[in-house]
Amino acid sequence: MKRIAIFCVTYNSYNELTNYLSSIDVASKVAVETISVDVFIADNTEKDYAVINNLDAFSNINCQVFPYHQNLGYFGGIQRMMKNVNLLVYDYIALTNVDLTISEDAFIKLVNLDVDNN
Image 1 (tube, rainbow, N blue to C red):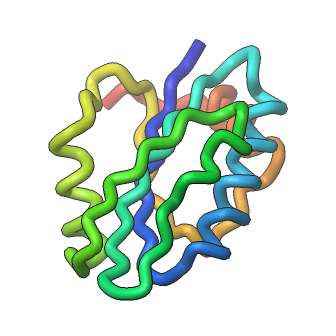
Image 2 (image 1 turned 120 degrees about the vertical axis):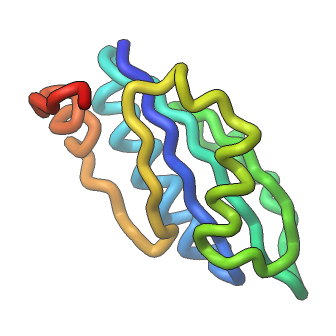
């Protein structure tokens, strides 16, 4: 089984985050026999932030929130999270935005992609 780590940053984009995670959850369900997905979320929202606690609704993915609640910028949030995650256990690492939708067959295509290890 392949493992993928997905890193994303939210900044006042909680609705988009929910839609994004839903699409990852569906794609993970389709590829449940071939891939395991961990999603790492940096919450850079400074004011009026919401507690992201509805992650149990996504049963096919493992989510971890880093509630920074300061604007570290996109790559600042990504870099800070990556320092706290063992990247060596993953076959794939993706840096994404939360305003995306992952297609249902995305992980199946990823696993079947012939990529040089370098």
